[in-house]
Length: 530
View (cartoon, rainbow, N blue to C red):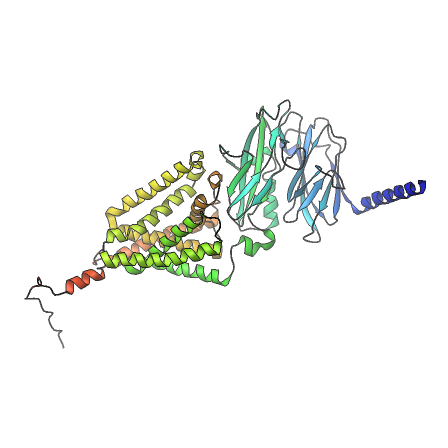
């Protein structure tokens, strides 16, 4: 029995010694750091680790430090931050933006960074320690569902439509978690669009580490009523990095949660997941959209019948796609195919109306409605959707339809010029959104966010606040130039011509000989020959 015990003890000693050999060490001296002024309350440094486990030993913690949050940030590779080398329940957190809280009542200030699945031979980490005193709020101190007793970090999940940023309620000295007296403010910061450089990524995180910088660089978002306070939804803009931060405040003292970053896509599959579909048929579709967009923008009114079909087709596709998206059983491919088939038939039906009745005011209604739809989408995309009152569906859609009707009423009295404006407006937007596929940009989300509001559950609670950076500014200017130039070209071409072409029935009726046709008709003089 004694021999067995001695063997076990020797094995334990060997394991401990080997673990010390295998663990690279990082020593952090906090003797110069104190809570208070931010340049002395945050330790930050970059490290490159190659081993599967790295020990972090924090020493010389001053007496005025009531707690600190240790953070580890990586670009792509998930790592585990733990208080033990051997993972035990409630002692670790895994991700690319992780953190744990240390309190002054804890005996050990040693942590471990463990690599789960190595993406590359080495991984670069940003190691941060933020210091607070005992009276500062505790981020995630009232944790109910995350894996660690105190959860100062955020957990992000995403799908094609939105990002879900989850956190836990903060606590404060002498305040019960049931009282909910600690104020919480949520912020976000966009990184440069379609930039997957790790330097840009880390620079964005550094801007959102402290309360002072969060207030300086971040954009605060409202906390919706009648929804989970610590689950905030954000509209997804694939390929554009977004840094999320939370500030907890109590008695004029504030503390920051661990910032978290998401691109809304898989960084390891950047081209396919973050830049959009790259298949040949998708490239062809975007090229066709550019061509037809320019055609409608500059010659839509001149080729009236062709434009009628294209507007009818677009209206049919849009309405059908929005309608069947309410049914979750359809796949994206099934929705697209069904919408295109119905759109094709709708275009034919709309041309038949012109052929049968020849009423310009009726025929241009679809173009005016689509123009109103796009204008209303722009208004909500530009900021109206983020006003809390519009989380209510009745308020949102009543306002949306009102904008559409106002646009329709303003265009109807000027039927010809209104149709020219509608063609240039819709055609130029179609052209710009197709160009976004090739060169980047987010103006296509003007329509996509409206679709999401119709079809995506709980999207009324999502933050829209779109990124509007240099490339979007240039595309907006190009859109305005195409619109103005398209209007100018079409108005110039229309001079001296009837406002609308005659339809086929009018021509046939004019040439038909009936009992009321005059017996003496003006003959066409023969041509002069020289």
